[in-house]
Amino acid sequence: MNQHTKPNAPVLDSYWMPFTANRQFKQAPRLLASAEGMHYTSTDGRTILDGTAGLWCVNAGHGRRQIAAAVERQLSTMDFAPSFQMGHPIAFDFAERLAEIAPGPAGQKLDRVFFTGSGSESVDTALKMAIAYQRAIGQGTRTRLIGRERGYHGVGFGGISVGGILNNRRVFPQLPGSDHLRHTHDPAKNAFVKGQPEHGAELADDLERLVALHGAETIAACIVEPVAGSTGVLIPPKGYLERLRAICDKHGILLIFDEVITGFGRLGAPFATDFFGVTPDLVTTAKGLTNGAIPMGAVFASRKVHDALMHGPENAIELFHGYTYSGHPAACAAGIATLDIYRDEGLMTRAVELQDAWHDAMHSLKGLPNVIDIRTIGLIAGIELQSRDGAIGARAYDVFVDCFEKGLLIRVTGDIIAFSPPLIAEEKHFGEIVSILGDALKRAK
Ligand SMILES: Cc1ncc(COP(=O)(O)O)c(C=O)c1O
Image 1: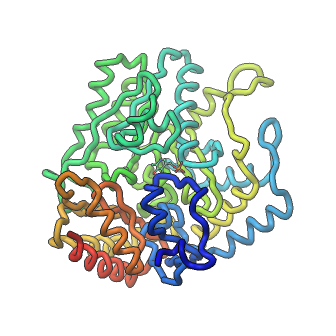
Image 2: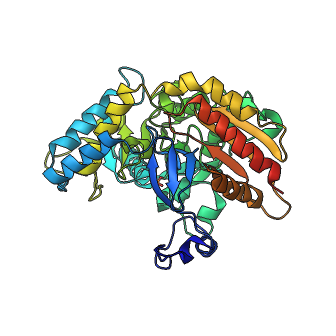
């Protein structure tokens, strides 16, 4: 009997679900009822190990009372306050706390913080900041935005324009002038690598090609995920990000790192910016910012970008941009409590301790049926399966459903399985993941 035919089961008709095959799902729904630590409990009472930190966001694990209490306190003190030409202390406090750990080396930290409501909003905010910056420094012809094939930058019109995943783009019009670097995925040269692959730094030179094609004077910014997640875990080749930074500098192009999934400890440093030692001009974040407890995003801007916009008459609004929920008090409360947990439990760097065991566990799946690549970095893994003829994604979807039934939440994109467990994970969880996934891979047709 399907869940939705059981007594007291929810009626599923009205909710139009995001990024979901609605009709298929409603035939055989997978419903989660509660969560604690590393686990979910499904509505039919099964315990499910969270291999994905929800959706790359619950870095400190589920059910953190400290966050719930902070949100409760804030909601009963002041539920909402406007942030346009007004303020409330907790938003400033949270921004100051974020500035302390902001991406970048001492002296060059991106410590000016703009709040949004999600990763997509952070991306569109950063793209607009880049264009506004260029105009403010007298480079108003620079409005073109460069992304990368297979990039995912959320679902706003800006994000899909620089994003490079076909299904997210083909139905919708995009911003005129946006263009793309090639992606860096090259399994023929880089299969089964732990950490950064050796081959592919020269792909950054695509930006030179686009400069030659369009003229630097038309390009405002280039945005990439330092480690691409939603497209199936693409890890930057050694030297690639450095080269991109150098080309941007040479041509006056701003570099934006989309750290919506890599921010807040995923790689073993607070940000991928710190992990790779390459400093962009803008960094977009969300997800781990509040441990996923309350929707929120933040853009970290360099002083260069921020200060360039703090010009003109003092009574003029410098950036005509913002959201009703920018700096929402409850989200700020969740964020501050989250940062306390990250600090007190050392979670921003915990992936360093875990990564060897994690990489070994994931790479132990090499040799199982249909596994054509395994790639790992920090507390992330991508496991790529051979696609069935004419049915891209079908095999990984079957593995996803099988794992869910056996008590493991994985994420699949096409025929790639992505893992990003909460940063509180222990080695025993890695063994459990390998065992459940390994069995599912052996069963998968
Ligand atoms: C790199 C990246 N950017 C942007 C987003 C969009 O974030 P949201 O779904 O919060 O809008 C995501 C979501 O997965 C992401 O991975």
